[in-house]
Each structure stands twice: as C-alpha cells, then as structure tokens.
Image: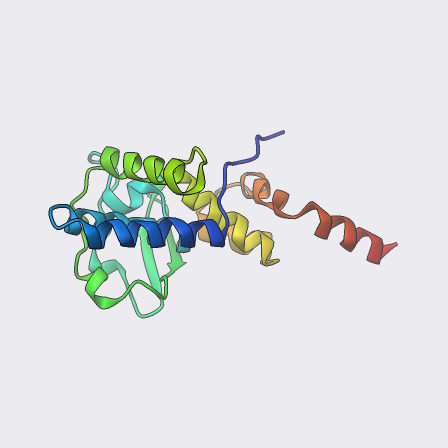
Amino acid sequence: MKKLPKTITQEEFELLFKESEKLRNKSKKRKTRINQYMIAMLLGFEAGLRISEIVGYKDKIKSLTKEQIQDSNIKILGKGQKERIVPRPRRLNQKSIDELPLKVNRRSLQKFVEVMGLKVLNKKISFHTLRHGFGSHLAGMNRPLHEIQMLMGHSRLDTTGIYLHANPSKAIEGAREVF
C-alpha cells in the first residue's frame, strides 16, 4: 500500500499565501523574488504543477513560459516529456504571466516553502506538498479519479488513488447509502 502524501488544505494554503504577501509587502529588497515564489506557489497548489514544471530541471524539463498559458488553461510538458493541460489559476493574472519564465532557483523556492510552512502552519512541508494539496482538494470535491489522474499527469490510476484518503467519513457515509 502506498504511503499517504503530506498535503495541505485550501485554508492552509490561503494562510501561507497571505503571510507570503505580507512578507513581500514588507521587504523592499526581496519583493520581486517573493512575488515569483508566490506565483510558483499558486501554480503548485491551484494547477498541481511540479516544481520542475515551473522553474525547469537541467536540460530535461523547460521552465514554464507565458506562451504555454491560454485563456483558462496551461499546456505543460512535464515529467517523462508527457504533455497535459491543467487549469489556469484564477489568481494568475496577466502581470504574473508576464513574469514568466520565473527567475528563481529551485532550491531557494523549496526552502521558502519549507520555512513558511513551519512559520505559518507549524508543519513540515515541501513544494510538492502544494501539488498533493491540489490532488487532495479535487478528490475532496468528489472529482472523478480519472480526471484527477489526467490533471496530475499520472500514468497509473493507482498513483492517483492515494488522494482518495481525503475524507474517510464520506466514504463510510456513501457505503451506508448503498446498503
């Protein structure tokens, strides 16, 4: 059996995002960098993107560019050179899109999310936790598993199945209705 992923809720993400916003507004020197971290966090949580799909990874995965963003979706060429389409976060405005590709180091982005997770949520999280939050949130909203699989870019349905842990009481309630 696969281990349950570390995840955050929509409410926890909002707390992280608001605190990042406060930090950005306080800091004159790091304003641009924090803004780019926030754009990446939004793409991680509300579009389910991997860190490598946002900032790139060596020569294997290219950074996300504004050309990949259409009106309501984002075209991703991700892990294993697989193409998929994900929803464009509503808060990803034109000003944010114009900042693509982001000029942040993946390690510093990862560190920022880890530090903010401990500071704001008192929880050890990573950037990938944001992506898990996306999958769990969709599962919690009763989206069909095959849709979540497609949005996450999983080749196997059992990989996507880890997000069904979201609400065991709903599963029990559903089972009672059947019998």
